[in-house]
Length: 44
Image 1 (cartoon, rainbow, N blue to C red):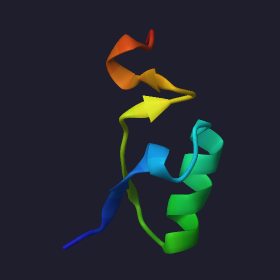
Image 2: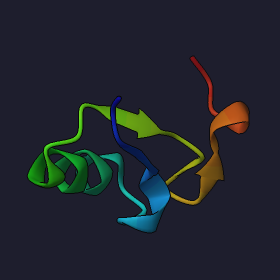
Image 3: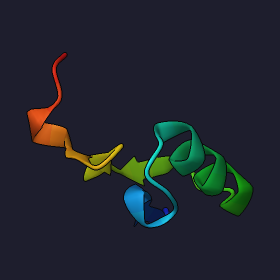
Image 4: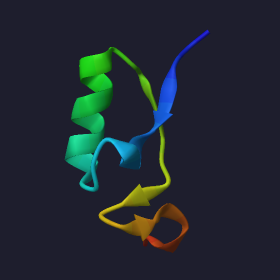
């Protein structure tokens, strides 16, 4: 079993999202929004 979380609930910036998950010891993120933009609307 592994834990993940909806990352944008930790903060808008991807750096903040990653930092929060690392502090929790979690290895996986569930991406939804990055800087207020939906993941599906971001360019590669």
